[in-house]
Image (cartoon, rainbow, N blue to C red; front, side):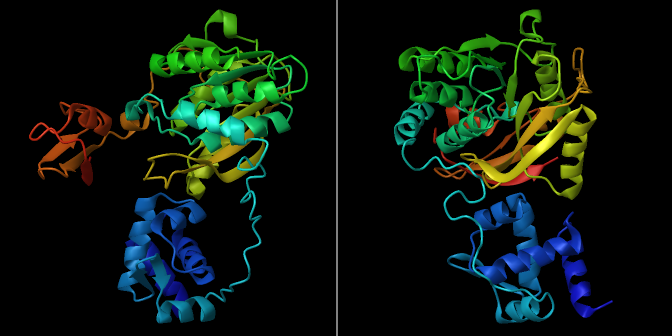
Length: 391
């Protein structure tokens, strides 16, 4: 075995990297093409959680191949030589489109600025995220990108559209686009949001009243089958489900319950980036339910405050086939949220007085959001630094 392969394998094993030696090589190539890079940017480019990036970086530092700089991670002289000689790395100009960054949809230019400004103002009044429901606020740009992608694919005009879970306010983005459409008819014929969080439903309904677009909001726990009036009634589904396979299967199952029969119905799915095994499980779940993947766009979604995933997520465009069937047609008794499937406790230290507080399952305060809302029991401060995770 070549020495370079031994180095890559040793680092992959030490960092417990599921992508294996090729993942370590990808890390080094990314830095060879551009250095330094902050951890978050590296995570987005590689599609890895930030703790995984940090673990690999640490092992590469110990091997003398990477060094820390004020601008982030960079190759050392030895690392640069290793990447060039052992990996045959090249540093060509980046061919990725500088305007859309590979997402195909551009929202930063006219004529979207007025819509984006309104959407940003509505986002500023969002309810606080509830991490027990796997919520993480998508940016206004993300909501508008999704809405415009759906429009471009012909999934909005004259269609009955159902959004399953909408703390990212995609329904609001769709509603704000309607005045730009030619004629007097709103883009979707019907726009419905189903969510278990009544705070967001009230927020969306208020936005509809204030900005003059029609949206129906329905409070419903998707663990239960859809209400009879929603079944077989829609042309288009959009969802950002919990990032577990059970959560994915459940939300897609409810979406399939809602769609009219027949192939070619559009399903738009947002999901966290996954390692190869996780990505295979994601796509296998979709295909086994009779959904055909038409496009997978990495780094399409950006989220505020989602540090573990570097604030990034993929966007999938699926279409139904004639074999599309719900995987979970009845009541779901499984754990569907990340905190249910992989319960964790975490320590947070108050930046005011230094007191340490543990949050998570079994604790008096189950989430960091609750701790911030309550304040530090010692000094009342509301700023905390994360510490150790506990199983």
